[in-house]
Amino acid sequence: MSRLVELESRIEELESMLEYAVDAGWADGLVRALVDVAEGRKHHQEIARRALEKAGLWPASQLTWWDGSEVAAASGGTLLDTFSLSHGLIIRPPWVARILDGHKTWEIRGTNTQIRGPIALIPSGSGCIVGVVQLVDVRRLSLDEFRTGALHHAIQDADQRPLPYPACYAWVLQNPVRLPQPTAYTHPRGAVRWVRFQPPLAVTTT
Image (cartoon, rainbow, N blue to C red):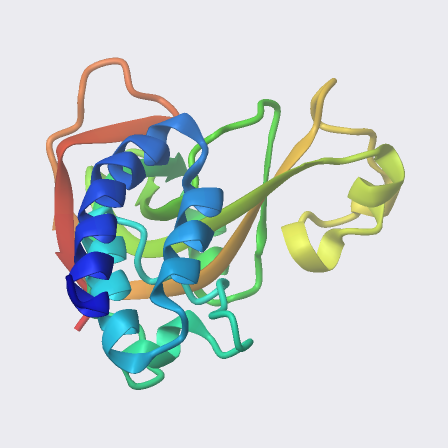
């Protein structure tokens, strides 16, 4: 068996694991394992990129190949134009605008989440997706971290405020992308924080 065929076989086995990992919160470790399999070679990187895309975990620009180059470089240094989205986050419109403008990289919430990867941004009450952002990490904040984190969460007068929740978490966001036109979706009854798209929803950013 050639090395390339062997890699393709191994990546096919990982694809189903990656799809499950999106909801299980294991995506980051499995993506890195997949990246390691690719060994930094261009044609192997392309196989890995296709697997990541199928699993809804691409773009993955926060990840790197074994040699330190960005994973996104496998597509010529640019991110893909189409996202496969399994979740959308409902946020008040002013905060959505700040996220898309790059002025808000922490979404402050009172709960943790295991969801990672690209998520849809949904202004509350709109019934539309207006952008996509990468949810890459969750951090529990102390009062001091909240008060000194205004450049990240964009909350005014944070240095004089108490924690907004008994357990305060920063959902860390990267690589916001604004859609050229809002995309309507069918809002499930009772969804107030997350919208789950079944099957995953494909949105195009160009």
